Length: 334
Image 1 (cartoon, one colour):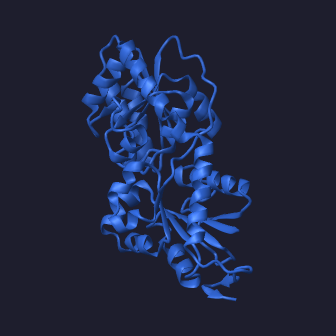
Image 2 (image 1 turned 180 degrees about the vertical axis):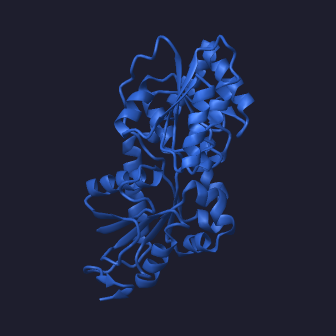
Image 3 (image 1 turned 135 degrees about the vertical axis):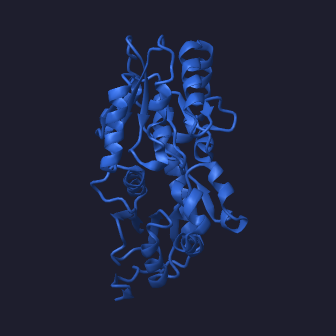
């Protein structure tokens, strides 16, 4: 089958949507499909579209639905889709209706959808390859934050929390991620100047991020909005426990009974939780044990199987032609 994956993130951009698109393309090729990854559908021949982001990919979704009304159209919902756009954005809402199948990246995402939409929705957890643990620093209790500096990530909450720690604490924060604008970069520099516990390392290659994560004691994700963060999958695969804001996207990844949550946006509570984790081996071991129980959800074989089931289900409910699908140019069948 010829599959086109549409993601609003360009190839040069390192973010969640682009990483998901490239990983899914690899898996789908392993399943024998021919896959093209595009920022916006160019009308080329396809038997199935898999679009990431209901709002930002809406033009491609609408185009494909108009040109190929009988072919499978899958829409994967991001955090901004689930927890903002589908509530009041007409283009995102139309994408939900046009899709023959929907995907959410963690189980809590289903709660944001009407019952009729849930019936056509698949839950597929993003996977991460295992990484060999590295010996942690003997000098510091290193905590990492992984994510681009943007409003939805609440990127400086961990830096603010670390400034509230007692002087005896050995916690140091390593923050990896690109500043999406000059103001965010200035804020990161200002945090480093007044807080010796915080270091912003900027954008790093994925391999270096994984190596750094593997040697950290903890990862913190402080986002105010997440669809199902792949950095949580990376931490689970690496055996690194997570401290997370108590938003649905994180709870769906880590489980309702997970003990490592703090109230979103509350640096005082985050500081207390970080200090408790650093000073209580029993609590730290509990975090590790709970994280280990979620690790099977993010194994690559699980994501591969989920995609295989998704494509089969989408194809079964659509009228795929017996021969090659038509070549489409400028919105019309050739």
